[in-house]
Each structure stands twice: as C-alpha cells, then as structure tokens.
Image 1: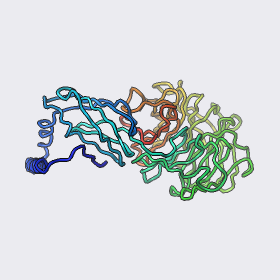
Image 2: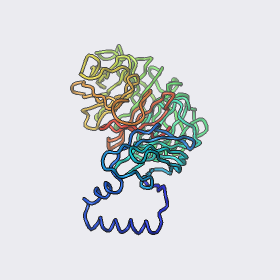
Image 3: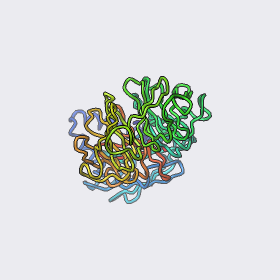
Length: 421
C-alpha cells in the first residue's frame, strides 16, 4: 500500500525528521519502539462505524490509549491505500485520553488503513466508481496472478473481473460484451487454459459455457441440444478435471453429479439415487475434485453436510454432517474448497453465516470466521468461496441485501475485509 499524508510538513519539520532518522539508524532498531512511545504514545484502534464508504459517507474510528500519557497528535495519523483512495477530512476529539476520529470526503477507490505509530486500523473499503454494483454475486475463481477475482452475478447475468486493489468490477462477458448466446443466470465459474478461458454454468438456461476472457465470446459446450445424455435441469456448481477435458457439475433438481465431456458436450450421470451407493445427494451447492480426479467432495445444503463421491462408481460417503464429526453443526453448507494437501475443506454455511474448516479424516468442524470470530464486516448470506494459489486468503461472495460484496477472509485469524461492493 502507498502512504497518503494528511498534512504538508515545513522544511524545519522535515530537517528534524531526517535528523531523527539518522539518530535512530545510529542507535539501532530497538530505538524505533522507544521513539514511537515517547513521541506518539501507545494506542490501539477500535472498529470503524462502517467497513465501506463513499465520498458522501462520514465514518468514526476510536483509539484507546494503551500506555504512556503522550497527547494524541493528528499530524502523526497516516493512511495507506493499495488503490487511489484518500480521505481528506479528518478531525479528532478527546485527544487527551481516548481520541475519536471523524473521517469524511473519502475519494477514489480501494482499501484504506489508518496507522498511528505501531497501531493500525481495520481496512475500510472506499468506492466511488460508477460501475454496476453487484446484485446477486454467486460464484468466483481466483487466477494465478492473485491480483483479481472473476465473479459471476446471476441477476446481472454476467461475468466480471474484480481488481483487488481498487475493487473495480470490469464486465468481461454479458449482453453487451462478447458474442454468442447471452448468459441468463450464471451460478458458477472455473478458470482454465492458463486462465485465458472460463467454464461457466448457467442454471437459468441449463447450459455449460466456455468464455474467452480476452473477448467475452460465449460458446455453448453442453445444453439441451448440444451433447447427449440426461439434460441439465438446475445445475448449481461446476469444476474441471486436471487434464481440462471434463467438467463435473452438480444439479439440485436431478440430485446428481454429472460428468460433461468438454469436446462433445455429452453428459453422463456419475452419481445419483440409482447410480452408486450411500447417502443420496439432496440439494448440492458446492463441488471440488481431488488432484487425481478420483474423488469429488460435494457440499449438500439439505443433508446438511459434505459427501465424498467416488468418480469411478458413484459411491457416496458422508465425510462430515451433524452426526459425523465434532464441532458446530452445519445448517446450510453452500460452497467448498479443498486444501492442497487434501486434508481439509473450507466450507461456507449460508444460514450460520460462517466459514468452516473440516478435517476430512474425522469430519470434525471448526468455525474459522463469523461475526464473533475475526474482525471486519459480518456475513449476511455467504454463497460462493474461492482461495488464492498460495492458500493464505479466502474470497467469499455475500449476496445479502446489505452487502452484495466480495470479501477477503484470513483463514488464520478469521478477519474479513470488503474488496468490492
């Protein structure tokens, strides 16, 4: 993030700063903490009044004095952004004890973090873009570059690229961008071919598309008139195998896992009530494959729980449910990610409004992030989940009326930050 200064410094002030830095360098690293304590005091930030703002929003943030009796100095408050956001009007009251900041006139786009000495605030998302806001974001995927996220929105009937620094939503394919049959209600996306194409399932017209990310052109891979086999009815989620020759789709009306040949569009039922043994699929809303393409893990909303499905025979085994594994019970699992070591699953719960971690070997469930775990905006209706290639950031789509946002989640702390809204 780049620093945005709140005040201009006089030449005398700048000379004093340079002299202080020279002294600190000569005295070693330990002098930095001493300088901060002696000159700024030790403070901590409390949560902002809101985690999202525009130029017309007024925010408040509190600071609590932790140590020292040094009076708060507004000139030493700094702000950093990864985009071009900047809040121009900042005032402070109660500076002798626990300062209260009033912040307004936030221009530009991107996340802003305020710092005072060693303390820093929660990131606040600033958005003044005139682009279409999300209306029902449903599915996402994260490219290898990690600087963006691709999102499908069922109400906007489009595919968008979200800039993670500014939050800008760039339409990649919709009724006015790209040739081909229009999307109707796209519910999931999977990037492939070195992140140059997107596999998109549309449950509004029961169609599997491939979309060229450079042009937005849409080509039908499989639908009622393309490919053989049982027609899709209400496909909710999709993924792709490691050789990128087959898609695997879950369909809530068919209550099935379906394999689709990407070359022909032919559809084959891999698992349903008459194919494979074990607990039946009910209302599937998430699918992920293991690295060898031998197993699929399916989040079933109404089980509620996680099924492991053997691709070779369709047999189903319950991995975690309210009767298998310990921990907080599922209410409505609605999205699923497999860790690279294939020992854990990250699962959204659309009713409990949380991110779960599931141990595959035991079925044990741990809540990683919710209103009472981690800082930041609270989930309202989390639906889609993705993970960055280094697996240290989760991305969650929340389509509640109050949010309709892309949220970044730290799986270690549970902290949540709005990245686009």
